[in-house]
Length: 412
Image (cartoon, rainbow, N blue to C red; front, side, top):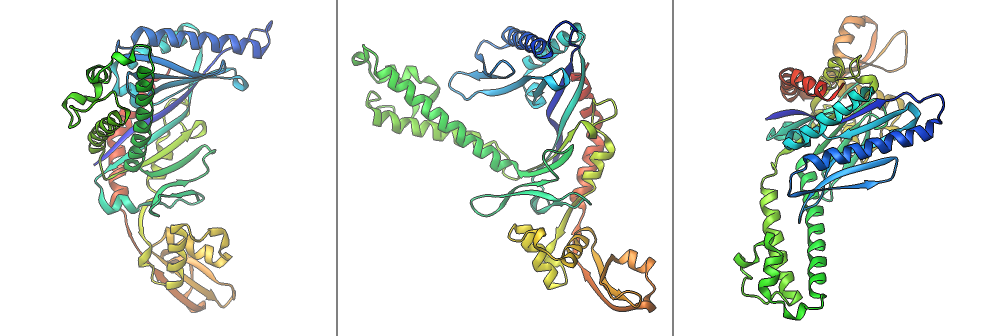
């Protein structure tokens, strides 16, 4: 199954600086106004079981919501971009789709910007393509796009490739491919480490109170109702003893984590196409179809182990594993490597007119080269699978209008 969504959106709301005031001073006034307004809007709509918290300074503030006993979830970041006289909003539309009250928050922020006469445009759109249970095709696909190099390769503890970047992360467009299942599991580990630490702090504070000598197990059970100690295998333990409390807490957190982890699809790979201002639509509201299709069409399931030339096969597999860097290759080795990634059959040859080695795809060779003038010729082949690329392209065809409508809903 393939799902597409907008995973991140960054916007700039521009303002005009009055002639009689310094730009930096006016920027501080504007960002203060935005922070206070967003805080009031959030407080108005937040459900009663949640708390709004924030972090940052007077120039950049991150807002979160938190449910008692859980870790905070990000809402949005608001910051001043003085170099463009603008306010930047950065948020994940997934949360707005997930929590109905955030839709009202974003609608009010939009109305506030309209009433204030701000001019807005998008500066970054992250298009997420989630692959669920697509098997080996999703496990082994890569990006083969002329001029786009793999700039990052990160391995897990087991040595498996976890995250790959294609293109420069600071540029106007790049692609990230990673194991979403493992990322979510890592987030759970972080979440439950924090919950454990917070629970111990709460327990220690409780036990250090003046009247703590009057506490019994039921008092602890009532204080930590979310962990259901009274229905656990430890229900008859003395929870006023820290080691007994720790054993019950470890069991409860283990049960909760196991429940959450079971809901994470095991076979979940994500491809993110990150598009910035220059790669967005002309009005800088949605994405440029041509740019997205260009990246999707570069997806390939190249089977490097099928490269017929063993030297080139060894080079390709070494580069794929991260053990060999492209910069280490000679000019001819680089040319062969790049050509075999792009084409399923290449020809390495020399001609009478030039003793230098040349490399072409089989189609170019047949069309452009006179066989009577060839003095040496070697064909190298490999197998490639394009079914995943075609499925992703079809999914984008079906989803792109809805994705654009969502982006339009956030803009002025």
